Image (tube, rainbow, N blue to C red; front, side, top):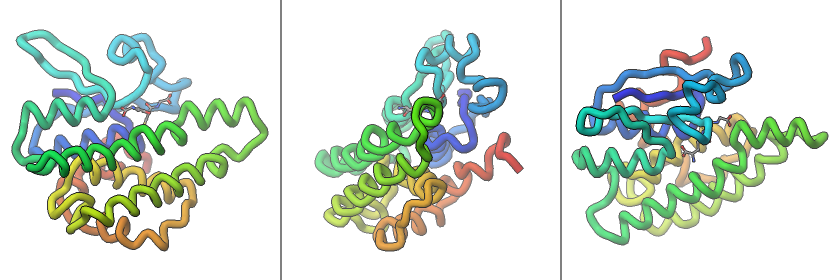
Length: 214
Ligand SMILES: N[C@@H](CCC(=O)N[C@@H](CS)C(=O)NCC(=O)O)C(=O)O
């Protein structure tokens, strides 16, 4: 497998964590989102993902090279094709709740703070784009924490990491970059600490990637 990724891309980070957690080897190809107008907009990358985004996972399916984009779809693919170790709980409610929490981040927070939105906001309006986006992150994480209180053990849903934690950790990193105050989010901070004690989460961190800016 090959992963087209950018070190600071939170969606790519999700996939990197799942690959590491499941012990899957892959080739890493960096797609620089800022250099040369953004390599994600190149013809070569558009052919892999018409949304012009990372991550993209390249896989061989019956001898044919296929490209999968959308991190949640990639997580589901990895979970189905490599079920162990599992990234979803055994019970149906736990699985749905893990996905619910993941979607708070994936569809409720990340799209309102992604690069394209920041760039367009900055070009079209006289606003500090990051400051404008920050409340969406704060509100989303507060909602996540409230819900996670119902199910958390060491992680967001029970005592093993799930899709929820995989989405949460990169979003907390971004929250800090956007200067969101998380000091009151004690549960999320504890879950983050528990995740970051695991090798897979350490390996997926932006600073560990080959394209990390020094
Ligand atoms: N829903 C998509 C979001 C992907 C996404 O927003 N990727 C960002 C990096 S985290 C990107 O490639 N942005 C490039 C751009 O906005 O030009 C997913 O989960 O994969």
